[in-house]
Length: 112
Image (cartoon, rainbow, N blue to C red):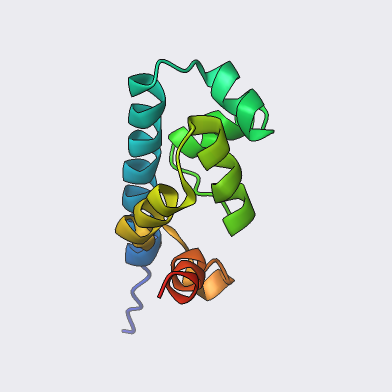
């Protein structure tokens, strides 16, 4: 008698889960800054040249893909690039380095 084992659930992707947690924390921090400054979603998005949906996606945990997008968000929040760079570095686990999203490394090279 031969028995084979097939898992009933797919393997848990720890890296993806960690990126989700870090992305959520980054988004909550962005939301906190926006609210602290008394900016609506619409106003922050307009000032950043983004759609409200794009801004909401970041606050929900989807991190910007390029340094230029991070800089646009700085404009939207009325923050400096250095402040935004520090947030990206603080929440660096949110970016998928294996997919080429290595903004934290790019920032480290710019500011070191």
